[in-house]
Image (cartoon, rainbow, N blue to C red; front, side, top):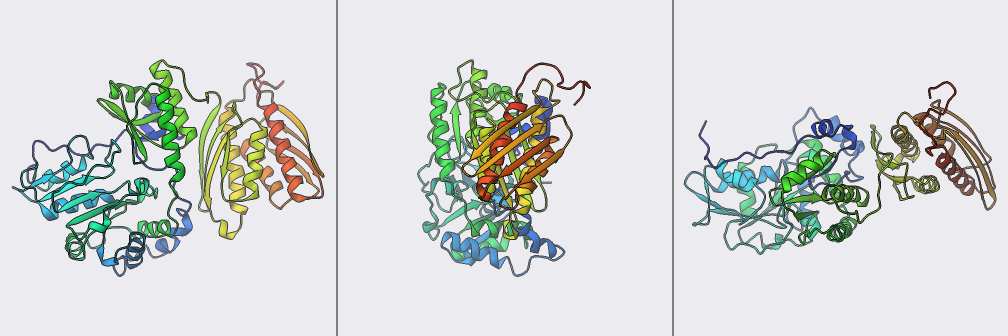
Length: 509
């Protein structure tokens, strides 16, 4: 093999989740990653149905050069399909650009200061040197990783502008691609397809043709292409994440830290001994990107971000500026061929509830159950709602029950039994629960919207609990909602810690 420059350093990955779990002494499902700059969940469009056609034809090579995907990308960016170059993520395209423009004896310019390390690696792999002396190619990262700022464009041409975080900052140089600019984008960040490994470059007609001629014949999988097309059909709304970024920055300031202003989906927080702090967080099951002088934190959502803030406060010996979420809590994922349900549950909660499954009224019902149960609950799901809400409602009940079972552990010290009566206008619901470990559902609804009884049957099965409900009323909505509230209030009593013993004369639940 041709020798590499002594300055070359290969890209290094962070510790895998299973190894973090072993280090922290927790289940892998409880590890939270703030180091990948990717969403905590994929888009709703990322579901088995989106790739069914691609899987049916998986034995065939991609036909016709990904015309559907190129058209979708072109439409999203306001260019022509022949100006699109596909790659295995933006990383593949960084390497492609370096080897297309540079070779031994050439120079490639990269941004000053800390930036994405693959630019340097790509230059050295091409046999070129890194510097500012008459470069044949210049890289720019906008917004810059890991600092998040939006820098001025370098004067050098040809210029590769990495816009991996474009969706978060909303500013692009695509209108300048005829001025010897190549714009790189990825589906890994805002679109949540990091595991699919798919990205694209946008360039002038001539430059795109030359890059495509030098790219692999079939650079991405048909499965990844199908996921990308589905994602482009319903692009993400990043507004909630941007709002959470600003909220988290404010909270970190309250903790005495000073995160840099960011135009991306992460915050760089200067600290002394960043690697030491990163290692400490790692042992708590929280993974950040650590540097000598700081840590980079991926924005997730308020529940996850507050968990990190609480842990940071303990590590720094300071009071936490957010509500304490300590206690019996669990993260759980249930994935089937039809649905993907992610649950975060805190039994000793403050009734902080968010349910987003797309199942309409049943989201509302579960929110009522959790609120009246005093639970902290976040449920996020994607499923085949076009065939009806049956699978989503059933799998949400199973996922919630499985999470509850995990959070209760061996159930030592709980009250075990709980009951409640809830009147709601014309409706009256009575509920009793037994967390003794035997699944059973005895349900009587005078009227209900259609899936309430099935929900409680599935919840009893997965949660290893007995649920008795008797609900009457003229309005199906009221009857079911009263039942959900009653079960929530009964659970609130049953999960209460009363002692250190087993609440059973058998000595076993």
